[in-house]
Image (tube, rainbow, N blue to C red; front, side, top):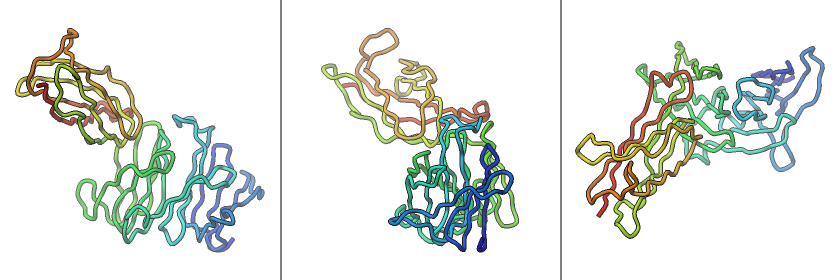
Amino acid sequence: FASPLDVAVDQSGRIYVADTGNDRIQIFSKDGEFLYSFSGTADFHLIKPTAITLIDARDRWSFFNSEFIIVIDDNRTRISQFTIEGKIIASISTYGLGIEHARLGHTAIDYYNNIYVADEENCKIHIFDKDLKFVTSFGRKGSGKAEFYRPRSITIWKRFGQVFILGVNEAQYYWVGVDGYFKGIFPSIFGEEEPGATISLFITQPAKIIVNIHKKGTKDLIRTLLPPLKRNVGEQNIVWDGLDQDGKLVAPGKYEIEVILKPTYSSKSSFKKKLTAYVERQ
């Protein structure tokens, strides 16, 4: 070894070491016997890895039963995803994401195999999906709600969605909730000849989604589009055909679209997110 900085253990007890000074990851059996190492390929090479985490198919609390390793390297500005055997799957840099002055710390993986990365310099937590596609970031410098001072480490109790974040002189505890936003209502105005609209939204965590249609300015429920179906991270497109609960085309006027997002973790009884948009039937 040369200045190793982090370690991870899989469900069978194998030990994965970020061998920082040697630009590689070394893997050992639970008894300490060397098994193999990897450092990338001719086209992609690890540069002083500083943090490592993983999930394997034997993990009881893994919805997708995925297997991969996440490594932080290249002066703490790059996130790379490898197979358990060390083959590169995907890689992304903070420069490519437009995140300036990043100094990435440790990482964690949740029940749905989303990836969380602590950013010491920007005082944020960055979240990626299981394919290493950027989802969202949260946090800022400070001592208030969802504020951090140089967050270094993060770990997640996957079963219940509990998140523990360690910064300088502080430790914080969160529940995984859900956030979301409308991407648009298409079309925002419809008529009798082509009734209905597509409700497009983006959610940051798997969630149960309920969609209610109300007459604008009243509490009268016109239609509930979906039972509480669980949807995964990312863009969701839900179609309203312009009909009410009785299967009749709604009368001309403006209608409120109420979207309720509920977490799927233990926080589901305590948290929800409500989004509101409008559509008009001519």
